[in-house]
Length: 237
Image (tube, rainbow, N blue to C red; front, side, top):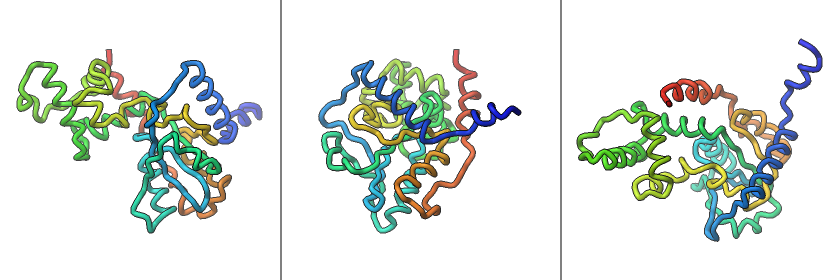
């Protein structure tokens, strides 16, 4: 292995974040992305270390919840819902957000909430089942215990849309694009990380904001999203 290739393989969290911030700003300007006046995001907030993490479902949100609990063990609130028009109140806080490959995020949601092996009682499976039965002109009871495929789920989202009374209102945060959920074009993010580099990015930005207790850091773990993505899209046309 050459010295050059070794240097190029070293991940630089600070530079990677700068690149992502520039990409986000460019996209926000190019597509003139705006949000309504009531737009809001959920944040893990640390008043002690003066930072806030924008939470996007299926983008390490469980890990972020764990961080919030460790930072505020006596609080009963894990996430704080902040409207974008009130973000000026947190002007001196370091603003952090993580993103994920969009299709990989959708596959993760599928296995979390819709696949036959799901272990959540959130009602997501039932919501999709209702739409499928309605589209087929069938009675819902004829679809009970149906193993919804990823293709069926994707077709519902594409054909019905995010605002449908059966689907959109039930879980818009899970299927809506990440730029919509995060409201990234409404505020200036100080650090943008990526789920693939979650451990490295958290280590870097936590040191920047002064978190010295490594017990708060998330434990390194192997991401399964890439393998599940490859296996799942095999069934797509």
